[in-house]
Image 1 (cartoon, protein in one colour):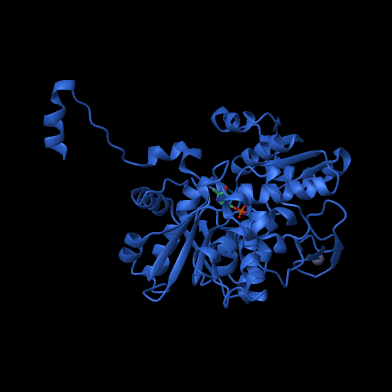
Image 2 (tube, rainbow, N blue to C red):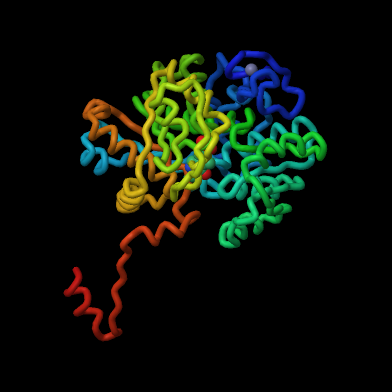
Length: 399
Ligand SMILES: *Cc1c(COP(=O)(O)O)cnc(C)c1O
Ligand SMILES: [Zn+2]
């Protein structure tokens, strides 16, 4: 496989750990697959990498390495759709992945690429879902795993990562510099960093769109709403749809919608202000921590790509996120704030008349609400208490 710079198109060989272009520092991307079909075997005996093997030709996606990632439900949210005045609303429930977020899809492809290059050590810089995911797959594959977190990370968030047994290193100092620092450390220490938008992590996210295509009988939605932090997931999802279109499996590629929180919306702001590149958010402030990347490494590429593909961009307030988290829970989905931002964005675009009764929309519910229990405080959660012999009365009173 060849790699290309997403900006200047400089070509690279797939012979070492590469992340960004040496000329312009923009993210690299694996070349597009132009032909291929689905491996229509027994779904229950396959991993996504086997079913879509033609689109992952560089890897042997055997079930031996899988933790059961992917093949997540796509649920018809008919009540919400009706309330919003949409034709259809589909919720892609990524919270049921092995470590409760979509990150697992990219972690497995990233690690398989590391193995292919002969690496024995992997690492990541993350505070949350990505760290847990890399630690879990590192454990499954018996690789030495290094997780770098900021020293301020509370134990309640650190311990779910530490459970998988990686080396957890709390780093003091500027967390953001750590990301660039890891690229230097990588060469010195022979560690493959499966960070947020490395090309072979982004590849794994393609299966998310392949599944949506199959789940909707190859008639994908008009819009896909993606909670966007680094931009890796959005890039992978879009690439997946594009490859299926090129291969003749679907007619049209859905329009992507970037969902960010107003408290940290570098990509949405760059778009709205007509900038070519994202500007750093000086003090990100949102409960949607998973999408609060102050300087998203794939931000410029998301801008370039969605200008061509006529994508939409929207940011939402904390209140809107909390309300949408509640609405989703009442529809049966307890997701973390970053994922709830998708529904908040859909509401915004419906109110603005941009989405309406002819539109089929899908929201990517990227991660589980149990990952961020601090959000409970933002909700008015009620409990009732009564004595054992008062239960009948109590039910009559509240029912
Ligand atoms: C990582 C993450 C995101 C953001 O994904 P990017 O690929 O960084 O854009 C969104 N939601 C959840 C729950 C995440 O863990
Ligand atoms: Zn370049």
